[in-house]
Image 1: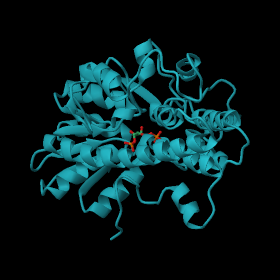
Image 2: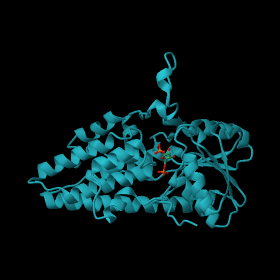
Image 3: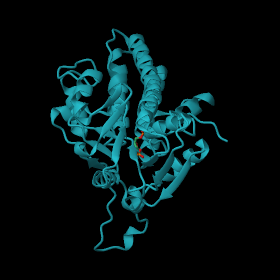
Image 4: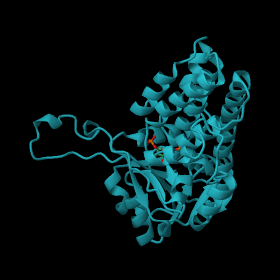
Length: 345
Ligand code: RI2
């Protein structure tokens, strides 16, 4: 049996692996892997981005604070451009690049310590969500999950460890088949699991006690942006009166949406859906990676600070993310900082 930690997944984080070989992976390589989804999952990409900024800060050989700031800003922009929907990425980058420093060494130390703190807190958050969310699961329950979410799987794993004799139904999650990762993890945990095609959700919903999914973004009004297909599952759960539970670390909540911004839904290469598109003259293959589930279909959002109703999302953004209109300390500069992030979404 393979031993793994939900927070780090089956494979060690790529950045950690390259460090162990004595070389640090260039930030552009981490960005490429995030874009191609070799590194994927909202939490993992946030931690990988924080780690690559930390490694860059450690290595930067610059003559002035201005040069340091400018290199960090350029790197942050490269990372931000990789996955336009995931707010975990921009929240992580914002936390790591928000510092006050009088010289390069102070700035370097600040980036390194913020990145390490973010990574550690993020991993702890996944564990805490498991503890909190598993209380929603009763003995003998059947849980349906979609895609491959560390936070959702943390809940499932905690319930299993508490001997609740649960069963899981996992969707394939086309087009990138993240469901196959999920069932591999569930197999290793020793949890009885059914793998279904995405379109079989309604057929099984009457056997499901609760749905547990992860999150890419929670908006200020409590709506959920998550892997494509989530909204259909939520609609189906609503119709069947089945509980719909979201597992989301607080850095998945979007400050930009308080400013009225809409979340951009990433549209990926159509060849992920249908490889041979060149033969079509009249057919357009679409590949939106995420969809939006209205807050009215969500029973509870399990975060590391508690299980909250979706209507409390605004409070989480204000209190946990410390979002203030006049923030000035990011390398993205004074009032322009928030706007730059907002423009991307
Ligand atoms: P954790 C994934 O995105 C899925 O949408 C999943 O629900 C979400 O990230 C959260 O994942 P993708 O990278 O952070 O597969 O809970 O597009 O692992």
